[in-house]
Image 1 (spheres, one colour):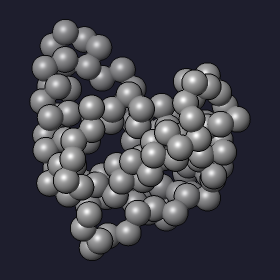
Image 2 (cartoon, rainbow, N blue to C red):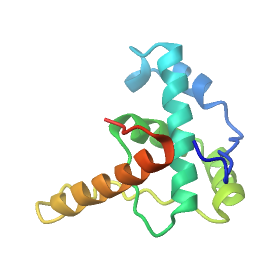
Image 3 (cartoon, one colour):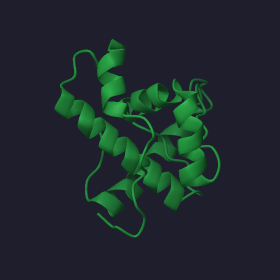
Image 4 (cartoon, one colour):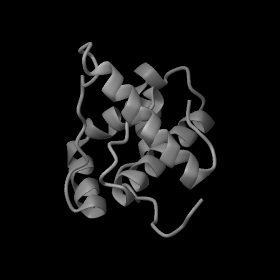
Length: 123
């Protein structure tokens, strides 16, 4: 992994929040949740390093992102500190037929960068 930009340090213990929240995370082990949170931090790093690339998260990353946003008292300051602004979530984009191929292309483009930076692709 390139270390020219640090991963974010969140003000919320996202692993603990995922364990407590259950729902999507209830059948996930703590080790799996830790990996999901680590990859979410890696997602943030890429979004910050490459602001011109619209990164589309995997389902797992999206679930961690949604949970983080459920704590706005943490999410907003974390964004402000790391991005000097907000990391916007465009919920629902890709649901319309004409948006689906755009979303797929954005996902592939983002995963190409992910693989270049981290040496593996998310599935």
